[in-house]
Length: 104
Image (cartoon, rainbow, N blue to C red; front, side, top):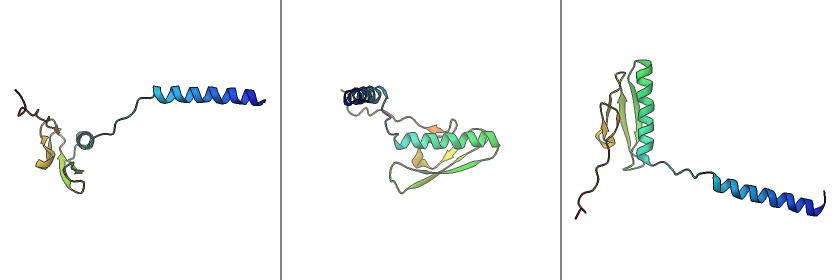
């Protein structure tokens, strides 16, 4: 392989790597609320599948060292610490209310 061939091959690889890095979508880091939602959903699914209550310890977003508990029941309901703001019937966090204080 000559030096020219090696340079051409290197250029092609560089262009391909550049195109691939732009084509791959970036993954945004999940926020704490999404992580809590996913953990509770897994516990709820496990409770429904096994027919037994599942208790989870969940880190809250208010303080990184604070842990709250949530218990999922076989009927699909979830009882959780008030800090998690979980709707007990669907077992998901309540939607964040929009701030209407700045409305004209």
